[in-house]
Image 1 (tube, rainbow, N blue to C red):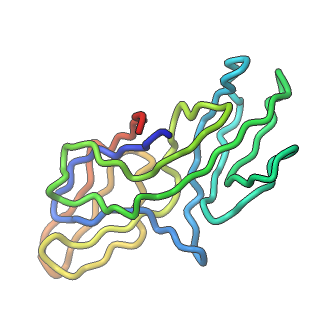
Image 2: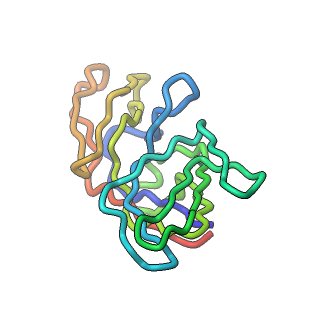
Amino acid sequence: MIGLNLKATLAGVTDLGFVDSPADSFEFTFKIQCTSCREIHANPVRINQYETHEMHGSRGEANFVFRCKMCKRESSATLKTTNKKYTIEDSGKDVRMVEIDARGLDVVEFIPVGKFSAKGAETTTKFEEVELEDGEWYDYDEKANEEVSITDASWSFAKV
């Protein structure tokens, strides 16, 4: 099991998390590597925690099933969000946001493409269109009359 951790600096916002529900699912985008032949897949892959796919020759299911083009081995991954929100108190610390059970593949990079949400640290303002592709996001909280930001956002993997 591998954990996907977020580390960021929050100013004026808290409760940063994925916009992810069965009706509006977050497509987690990763670069992956086959553990058998060590080939890194040329294109990023997307994993949806609400989709399941059957694994060939097994009664099991996974959120993502992949056959390596080089060695033809089948790999799978099951993903689960921790439902934790990254708070202003967590600022500058690693917090596990996702757990990944990968079989036959390694996730080597997370690409934060998709919608995140946050709320004002001192107000009820909701920010539903937070984008972290560039590792930073800036907006203005009209209720607090101040700029809010998320900076130095970085993602890392750690064994669980």
